[in-house]
Length: 151
Image (tube, rainbow, N blue to C red; front, side):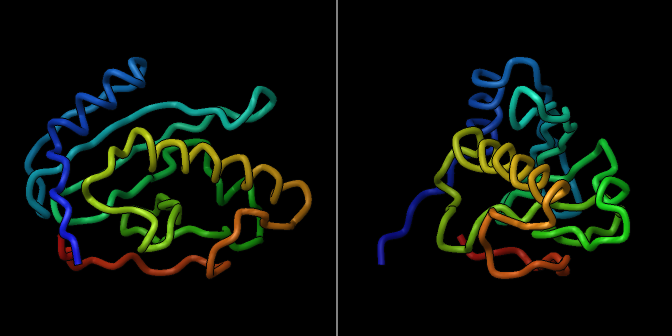
């Protein structure tokens, strides 16, 4: 099995700044170790809502995409949010990929960020039709894995 070298957080941040200049972020210490936090707006399509997200990416942990606004649970009403993880701070984290779809050598700006925009497109369709077209393996919020992942 071939091992890939993780893309350093500083490189991830530089790529985000280059390709999403309207976003903002930094690397700082966290209880999980060094962590990249990135904030940006995204709109899944020209008629779509604008969503404020926070990407949290700590070394040896998979990136999380938290939805800061609007309150997507309020938009969903009494329905359970599809393809989300529950978080301690109450902000939903998007379920964006299968374990085999992403690895630490990949830039989040060309994987996780576009996947989040795609998730919002499917979310807006689900709000109207009740049908989730985004695929996946679960349709209810699940707990986030808190242990570090092997690199």
